[in-house]
Image (cartoon, rainbow, N blue to C red; front, side):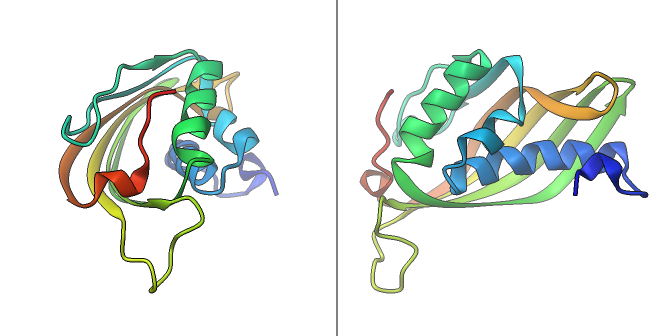
Length: 162
């Protein structure tokens, strides 16, 4: 069922759905789902990630964002991301979402498992700007990620530039 077809669909539902498509696209290595979250001119900014983990430059343009996220995270490791403390502000056809993001990262094929304790767990904050596409679907125009805390082994995430 298309979310926009539900009876009680709200702007908040659509905004949260866009960010959920983003993280689920990564976690399930689903390029189509990941692509559906972004505008064509999207920017994904990881410069706020703790540089002891990795130093990033912002990715610009939906094709670059999707290709890079799939190559460095979606297909490169086993992940699980959970969103919480979600706040949404809507102003016409634009919106801002802030939330916490807990991300569990394992080497590809090694997690999650009680037998494999080599991981990187990140506590991040998302600051996301969204726009309404053609009057109905919300899309991420810019997503800025900043570190709040981390624990584990950065090497377990196999973070490499694309």
